[in-house]
Amino acid sequence: QLQLVESGGGLVHPGGSLRLSCAASRFTLEYYSLGWFRQAPGKEREGVGCISKNGNKVYYADSVKGRFTISRDNAKNTVYLQMNSLRPGDTGVYYCAAAKRETVQNMCLGIYDQWGQGTQVTVSS
Image (cartoon, rainbow, N blue to C red; front, top):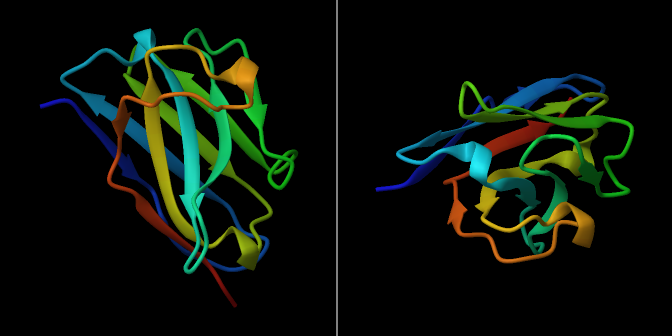
């Protein structure tokens, strides 16, 4: 069974940092573009950003631009979300998702074929 597994979530103070990882098993991540999404309690899921298959293009939502960085290491079959200057409004469950087609040119919109189970990020003092 194809799987994406997120890790790295946790509790952090405002202004702190976390790095999330998204590892793929039983399929090769380099053939997929990757998106990061989040869902806060009582809110709809929103896109955080996405990265192209070769890693050369990245798109970020305005709410995280300048604070979050998406990168990928295809040799390790893993994509990362580095989150700095975290705010309470960044609290939520973070998901990674893989798309066979590129989504970065369309602000990360598209069909995502595989989703991870999510990891909780809580930003609180």
